[in-house]
Image (cartoon, rainbow, N blue to C red; front, side, top):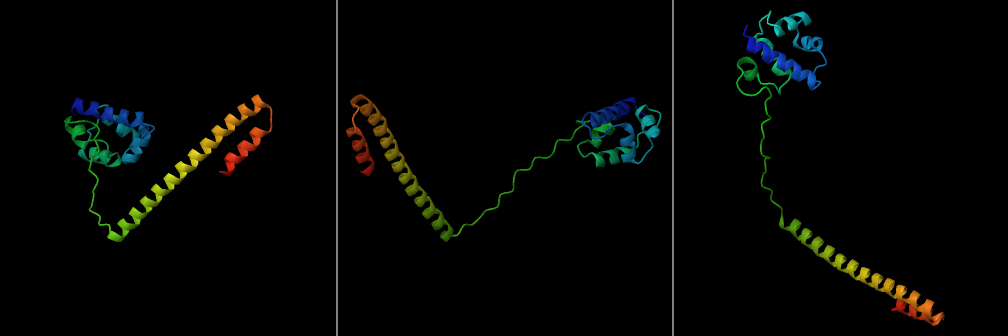
Length: 153
């Protein structure tokens, strides 16, 4: 058996353990359907790492590259294929566009109303702030009636 293959096999076992995909070699051996001592023998070059073992390993852990494990070509970890999202054309009926347009116009109208209400409230808060200053400086109740008139308008 090639020493390089044994090293790659040990690298795979370390990778799987580091990422907690397997907790120990006994668990990996069980998943592969082999004995713990047989796994140890493969890892240490005393037994051959068969293509069947490699394929089973890559079936159990699809992130592993069988090509890399067997030949050393490429990367140990297979990058997931990136597929652009499938976009199908969607036809929106004219009636739906009309509903959307009306809703947008309604929202614009409500935004304008809310803005006007905020302006009124801010104006009244300004009057009240001015009223408190006037009231404290004049000490009279006349400022109070004046403030009430602003709320009524």
